[in-house]
Image 1 (spheres, rainbow, N blue to C red):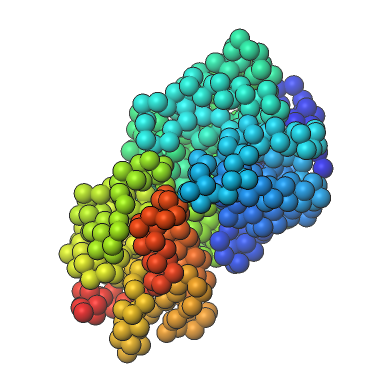
Image 2 (image 1 turned 90 degrees about the horizontal axis):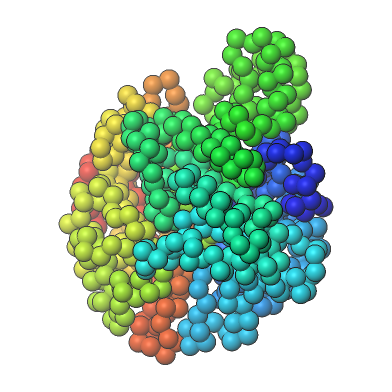
Amino acid sequence: MTTINERIAALGPDEPFFSFEFFPPKTDSGVQNLIARLHRMAQLNPLFVNITWGAGGSTVSKSLDLATLCTAELGLTTCLHLTCTNMEKNIIDETLSKAKQHGIRNILALRGDPPRGEEYWTPPESQEFMYAVDLVRYIRQEYGDYFCIGVAAYPEGYADGSNPEAQDPKIDLPYLIEKTVAGADFIMTQLFFDTDKFIAFEKMLREHESGVFRSIPIIPGLLPINTYQSFIRTAKLSHAHLPDRVLEKLDAVPSTDDEQVKQVGVDILVEMIDRIYNETCHRVRGFHFYTLNLERSVALILDKSNVVKTPLRLKLVAQNKEQKTEKPVSIESVLSDGVKDVKITEKVAVAVRASEASMTAEASWDDFPNGRWGDPRSPAYGEIDGYGITLHVPAKRALELWGSPETTADISELFIQYLKGTLQVLPWSEEEGLSPETKLIEVDLVRLNKLGLWTVASQPAVNGVRSDDKIFGWGPPNGYVFQKALIEFFVPENKWFTLKEKLQGGDSVSYYAGNSRGDFFSNMNANDVNAVTWGVFPNREVVQPTIIEEQSFKAWSEEAFAIWREWQRLYPRTSKTSHLINMIHESYYLVSIIHHDYVNINALWNFLQV
């Protein structure tokens, strides 16, 4: 297989290109659906694809398997992410060896989470890799020029969240120079939405007196905007500045109308690509899409962009021109139809146009928000960034927020403070605050947390409110949305078995429960599915963006308990806090309860009166 730089060198002068990034899905069905999605998106002929690597190597086997599939089965030039801190050196050696064995010739060398000392769990031998530059040097030392190595850059400056004022690309510059001199072949940036800052960043690098950036490919990382909520959340987590003009465009449409937000987001990305390509005088001609394992937004961008033109699009343009079709066939519609081989025939044009009438199109079936509460069959289920388990805040800030709890009462107090708004974030949440609907059930949640049931997710029942409702609304206009009450919490083992008896006798409740040891209980069959949020909209089938079933619960349970372990690693092994969190990790259960009587808004909370 070829390297990324070899493929770039083979392009014509100033010829643009694009690439995609994917992450290993959490569920088996998500993997199968991603494979189908990859087959479709491979038709667009990306220059290469990236496969992410979970924090601390948490997705090592899945990442390698996915990268191998892209290389061997799809024939795609593939770049494997590799982080080096807080990880055994033998994992790095084994990964590089297997990557070479499977013909993967591109590595994006990343640091990962800040390294921890021996007293904070990290084995001493892995401290050989403190920074990404150490990994770059090591790969060059062991493999010479076999691997094409990419490194990360931050157009707005690296931010760890503890000191936002220090976010300045000039501060990072010495480290980027060091990585480049050590053997980097290309630079890929963190996502951003401020085009002016990227253009200034690229100019600063090209003109730097060292000359190390004069000709190295600099590839901007672009995040398609799928929903308003995920856009704001991801920008905040990434410390990406949101220009007024971007916010003004999005504010011009209802934030709850995902379709309109998506269309505006497409226009924003198309404009960003056009400006970057032209205002850098074509020095920047590659564009990397953080797909989040979704395809429709990317297809729409490629349909509209005047810069990146895929071979598939050029075929379709020629077909539309030749046949003078009333409604031109688009990339999006071809992907939606699942056509594997596009030929310039009227038969294909008719088939594709017919597929556009279907709301079950392959490319857009999981368009609605995914994340923790999405459809577990979706490749995008359970993630917003694909980088695996994390506390979402830097270690220093985490210690400032949560202190050093030494009793379960201390833990309860943290959960209660979060519910009351005096604590900004918990290990299982993100720094965006509670949703407005949570305030409606705050009294019930505080009561449960005082009893030692630590709630990590919840929603009240809703019996048909308009889709533009300020609190519960989502989806297209003139629709109605519904949801069942649910709650999810950690509970001590003794309390769980008492609660289990009550749940077994509840006719209107479904539950899942599990612990870190792999024990699992439920009153449902393995293939049962619970729709807990759905919407009814004009001219569409009923949309069910939120379901809970066994596979998704088990995937989330594994992650939820792993977060306890991540929290534990903030503290020395011998500390009281470490022992407390370890006890919770080993002996508590995670319980998810759904109440099916969504007409009675108090049904779940009355049931849980203890």
